[in-house]
Each structure stands twice: as C-alpha cells, then as structure tokens.
Length: 427
Image (cartoon, rainbow, N blue to C red; front, side, top):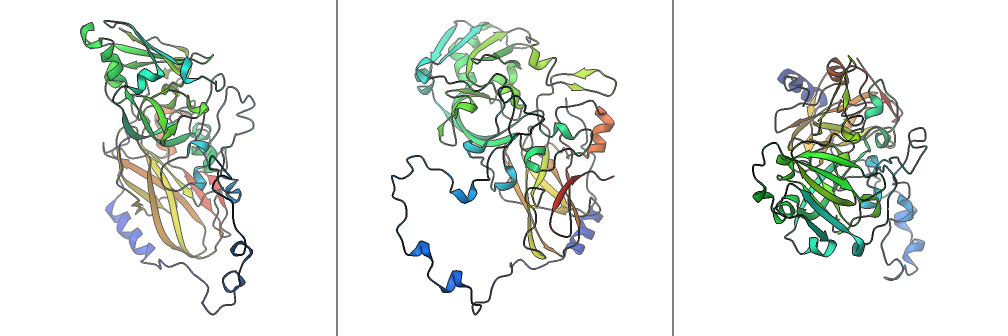
C-alpha cells in the first residue's frame, strides 16, 4: 500500500522563475594561472623519482590510504550490539551509482556467519510436485541473469520521523546499497520442483528462510516470486561478501531489505502467509491511531542530496558548485529529480547522469554558481508511475509520528555561508 502523493506536482511558474533566478552561470571551475609559481607543478616531486609498488604487493586490491575515511559507520546509541545491528554506507563520499561491496551497508539479526560453498544447501518444499535440495554447484549450472538493483532497509531515514536527528547523509540515508547481482531467477528453481504441476497458483505464497541463527523468514506473494526475484551468488562481479550472505542470498527488487534473506536455505510454497515476527511485530507501519498496517513491501520513490551535506561540506568557497545526489524507487524507474536551493520556493530540474532504470539508484546533478549565501537544499524524485516524493509534513498527515519504517520524505540540508551543512527541518 503506497501513500498517494501523486498530485503534488511542481508548478511550471516555479520552474520558470527558478531557471531565471539560477541563471546560466559559469561552468568552469577556478584554476591557477600557468604563470603562477606552484612547486607541485613546476618542481619534480618525490613520487616521480622512485619506483612504486610491484604488481604482487596487494594480491587483492584495497583503496589507497588517502581514502581511508570512506568506510561504513555505526551510530553508537543505535548499534550498541554489533551482532544484531546495522551499519551505514558512506554515500556522501561515493559518486556514480554502484556501491563497492566493501562499503555496502549491512544488517544482521544474529551476526554474519561463515558458510562454505561445499556445505551450502537450498531446499524447495511445500506445495510443489517434487521437493528438491540444491547444492551451490547446482545453482551455478542453471541459466543466470545479471541485474543492478538497490537494497534499502525499511528503517532507512527512520530516525527522522519525529525531527532532524542525525547530522550526516551516511546516517540518515545510508542504509542502502546498489549492486549488480548475478544469480538464478527464483521461478527457475520453483519450476524445477514442479510448481506448475502443483495446481492453481492464485493466492499462493512462498516463505523464505535464512541459514543463520536468527532464521529470519519472510512471506512473499507468488506473483512477486515468479516475477523478478533472484537467488544471487555474485555481486559486482565477485562472490558475495560474508556480510552480504555468502554464498547465496535472495534479491527481491524494489522491496524492503528485510525480505532479501541472506544465506538462503529454504523456500516453502504455501497457500497463505506465515505471519512471522519480521512481518507482524516488525517492519509494519504504526499509524497515528496506534493501528499498524503490514505488507508495505515496495520502497516508494525517494531521493537525497549527498553533496554538499553535513559530511561533505563546501570547501572551495564561492563559485561553480556541483550539487549531487541519488534517487530511487521500488515501483519503477526514476524519470525526473527536482532540486531547490531555497527550501522549496523555486525548483530546478536536475540532470540525470543516466536514464533511470527500474529498482536501481539514479545519480543526479545540478551545476550552479554559488554566491556564498546560505542555502536550504532539497531534492524531490519522480518515478515512472507518476509518484512524487512527499514532504515530511505530507507523510505525517497520513502516518502520524509513530512510524519507524518506510520514511521517504524530502530531506533538508541547511548550507551555511561558511560551506558547512546541518540537518534541519523547515516549515
């Protein structure tokens, strides 16, 4: 069930006024004159006088030490127990859309387990013609597919419901990653077990379960299971990392991350949902009247400016400025992103780095000439269904203040005259 904000369209008058106010501006960054005496260009440097590391110095390539701050981070009061906890992707420090596995967010319910390929088993059971157990080698023998999808925790931005809480886009929006997954369509394995021979599939469900101690399990309607769900064993071309479910995990495009069960061990076909802990007492939306709605699977259209932001302030002063961010939707492709620098008075259509693709992150840019005045930066995503990302006030009108999950509100960064940024709310 989606909150309906499809009628919240920007006006053409706002766009025209905004375009005029923004102006053409200069697109060339300031630089030193060739006549300036800069020893870093006019003198031979140390690194040009010695040989560097050999090709066998790092058998598995690692980031250079100058980028050592680009790492996942925890929130102390949220992650007191790192076994059953979460960390956040450094999206403020990344560009493009693909998240390196080494800094892709992770969420565990009982810690990341070590499971060898040789010991891996996947059972298909329940309402099928023949119950089967697959080994890892079996999975590799089926026709495989590659797709780029985002995985977003339903609690992403969840701490922001009651007000601006965390001062950094890594902490407000970093429970997300976007990777190229390689795997076998789940429908292929279900059909191998004789699903088509099991009778009418209308109203049928699957229950998926992981091999870790938490036995995290979720019910998924059969229509989704047969559509685009993957049993994945590679990400970004290499084996899954331990924390991402090595050797095989479920990929449920566009739907909340809790359904992307890691260390996938069992898929049971049923005639009704299981109503497990993770889909009743957790991952449901508690409304203002205390009632909770469940089955909020798809992640609605959302966006955020990643730079400038609290962890990525403006350091070069006035002049050309590239505003950059990410947009995504669990219901389809991003078609447009609007950006405002004055808290919503005027909106400008951002430039998409690439046309949006379904259930994947889209990078956007807005190139401006910054005059050194304070800004209130926001972004607003549109997807191919016509949905427009809502403000926090619009969400609160529907949900109240009791929610934790599925917060896709517009985020505001207050950019100060000195280039620093702060997480704020404006009304």
